Length: 277
Image: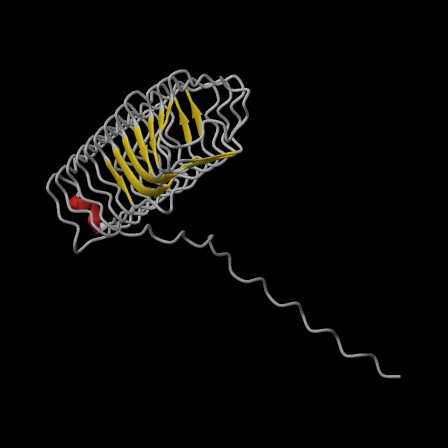
């Protein structure tokens, strides 16, 4: 029998080659060259993920600019405008935002901890889960906040602030200053209030359904229209508080509450647990 033909030799190994080079770094963001006071970003609107801590952007036009996940810690943003900006998950901690305009901006999940926001405007902004802890919001305008669930206002200063036509559902107000605040048509459903300064505050047509106001000092507070249903007022002090005839008080927990001198203008004072004093 014939012998089988010899097997072909194995292929020669390929010549040695170095590891492929990493791709080149992307070119620098040209918008960063505009970071300065009184700058106009109208033609360069992308600053996402930028590190802009301590930047000087006062009086700048940042309308409709993308600032998602951007860090602006301790930046000077006085009188800057952020109308319709996309700034979710951004950091504005310790920033100076006095008179800044965030109207219509998306700042959900962003942080304004310890920021100064005196006379700032957030009208129509998206502030879901935004953190305003210890922020100075005196005189700020908070109007038309219909996308504002789980906002953190712990330690924030809202003295004299106008809050209206908003849904602050499941908000946290621990140690918040609401002194002389004017609150009109705001829904505080399921919100937590602890150690809040309510002195001189007025609530018009506002809802506190399922809210926790237990142990709060609400002396002299005016409730004009609005609704308190299944609200926890246990242990609260409501001395000299005023409830107009159009205030709905339904199934509230008033155990241990003090209504001494409270005025019920046309409303029955006991549509709730008579255990409250």
